[in-house]
Length: 302
Image (cartoon, rainbow, N blue to C red):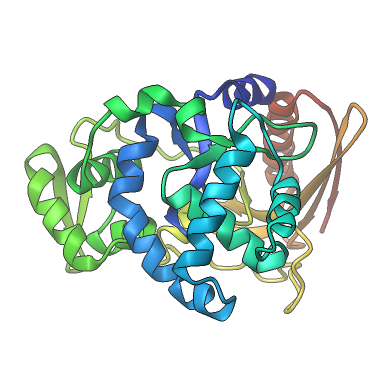
C-alpha cells in the first residue's frame, strides 16, 4: 500500500537523492554512501555546464554546502524553499536553477539527503543524521553493475551506461568483473546480461499503466512500443501522466488526480480497443486505486 511505502520513506528506510544522473532517485539507506562514491564524480562532471552557466564556481558551491549543513544541524528538516531563504540571507544564489544545483551539489558530496515529507512538501536532512549506519556498507562499480543486471536484465553494457551515467569503459570493466555471476545471451549481435536465477516470465493478457518517465522506456530505448492506429496523443501535447500498453502496443494515454477520498482516472484509447481490453484496463486502474487507498472514479474514452 502507498501509505506503507510513505511510512518507510519518512522513517528513512530508503532515501531520495541525486545519485545516478542529474535527477532524483530512491536508494536504500544502507547503500547511499558507496553508490555516491561510485557515481557522484561522473554526475558532477555532467553538471559542469550548468554550474558555469549559473555562475556557481567551486567557492560558491562549497559555501553553499557549509551553510546548508549548518541550517540542517541537529535533526532540523528544511524544504528547498527554506534552504533558499537561508542562502539568500548569506548573499548566495538562492533561486530557480542556481538553488536547485547548489542543493544538488550538497547531495552529491554526501552531506544531505531527503528528510521526511511535510504535508505535500519534500524536506532535506543531514545524511550523517539521517543514515549514520550507511558508512559501514561498501561496494564498487562492479557491485553496481551486478545489481543492475539482476534487477534489470536482460540488458546490455550500453543500457548500464545509460542508467548509471558511467562511461562505456567503466561499464565494460564492471561487467568483466562480475560476468561469472551472470548469464549472457546474444541477440542481434548485442550481448545481454541477466541473473541466471531469474524466473522465466510468462506472457499473459494484461494492461500496463506506464508512468510518463517509466524506467522501461528510459533505460531501454531499443524497446519501442509502437503507437496503435488512432492513438489519442496529439503532437506537441503532454497532458497525460503516461501510456497504456497492451500486447506490446501503446494503445492510449492515462492520467489521474485525487479529490478527497477519490482517485479520478481518465483514460483515452485508440478507437479499435475492444470491450474485453477495456476490462483489463479497468482491472489495472482498480489495482492502482487500491494501492493508493482511494475510491476509483474511472472514465474511458476512445
